[in-house]
Amino acid sequence: MDIRADAAEVFALVSDLRRKARLNPNIEVVRIELEGDEPVREGSTFRHRFVKAGRIFEYRSRCVRCVPPRLFVSRGETDPPFEVRVTVEATPAGCRLTQRETLEVPAEALDALDAGPAPAPAFRDVVRWLPLFPGARHLGSELRALQRERVLGTLRGELETWLHAVRAHVEAASDKGLGGVRQALAQGESA
Image 1 (cartoon, rainbow, N blue to C red):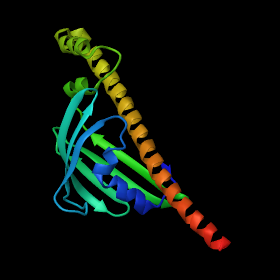
Image 2: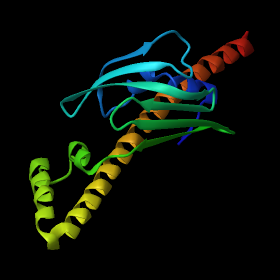
Image 3: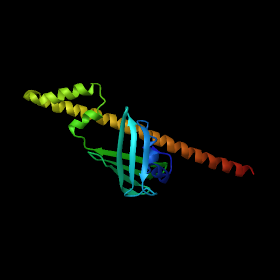
Image 4: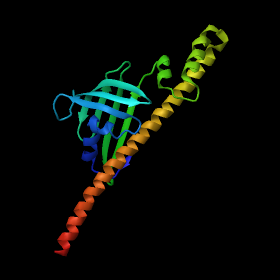
């Protein structure tokens, strides 16, 4: 995602998970704390607590790689663990922000992530009974593949919405700063 702002400014925001999480419209942040001292660096640990779809989520994440102002990689200390890799590349118009999230989800955990059209308990019941019928085993794997694609689409959409919110926040702050510079220049010219 291209952003009209300085790469260092964008990196400062996305590497501070306390600030970045508050821009996520998909969750309600209860608390995000940095354990330890500033600045955020490799080894920094964050404690997260937020509400999503009426459920409370709590976990820790650790910065496993930090190369300011270009790369920030964190790993969720969850079961299974997940990794978030954020890169910020300077461009002539500002910078390009890329976020890749990696999570291996076992089939049984898909039910917790799936907010698809079918009620989750009914879907779980169907998939649980399919292995008992030899001719239906293939159908079970196809249903899981469809469920996996549905979850992936939902997560991609949520990430895109979040990154748009980050871009809007940073560009608004950058435009405000440029407005002040323009105003100061205009005042200097009229003096």
